[in-house]
Length: 118
Image (tube, helix red, strand yellow):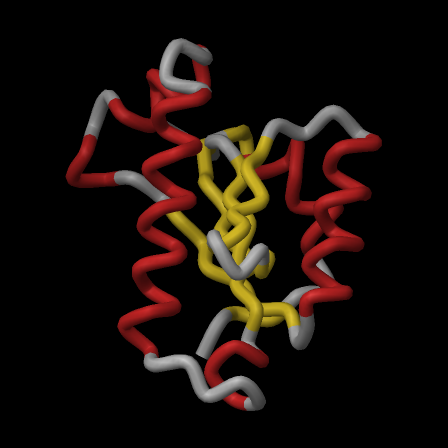
């Protein structure tokens, strides 16, 4: 699975400014990861990623706001990078974004300015 990575981008303001419980934010990420696995299950990179469950490589990054998340969504869409923008319903709030597994060098350039989620 050399070099295959899945990136998760989470809005930090959900916890800091909007005071969502950490568990609620984690649930958003779980929903989005599950959706990406379902949507892109047959993709060769996804199959490689899933072929060794004990050694999957996932990187969780943060963005400061909804606007930043939407900007990344637009950039990824424009560059044909397959992903899922998770929008919590019924509130219609974009909370996180998960990119399907890709070779790191295919997607890192779109995310290199983001910090690890803390």
